Length: 139
Image 1: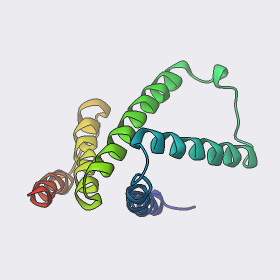
Image 2: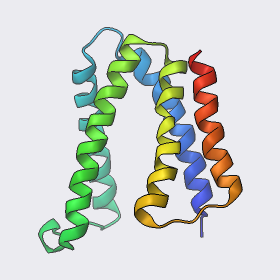
Image 3: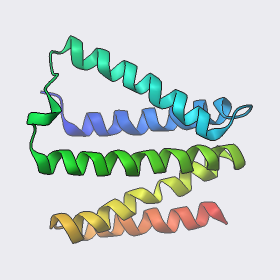
């Protein structure tokens, strides 16, 4: 079985490449339209993936709580993408992406507060270093 860590590193890699592609892509078009194009391609890609893997289920028979939180996640993802693409259009990718990664520290704090996750001192230090690193990159 593939480890979650491999998927996490792959996610980081693809997110890094995404920032570069997006910065180039928003150069001559509106950031909102760029986000729409990106979203449309993602919907097509995921539709094909779910179809080929036989993973489709009727959303109306799924757990209501899961659906509510997935809808909330979709809205926050959309807002994040809109803000990210606009920031990329206006600023350097290296700085925009660095500031965007503050989401890691925020996720750590929210996971402790709302999911009851317990962190080691090393995880707390890592979160703090992310914040400090972002501040250093910004200035």
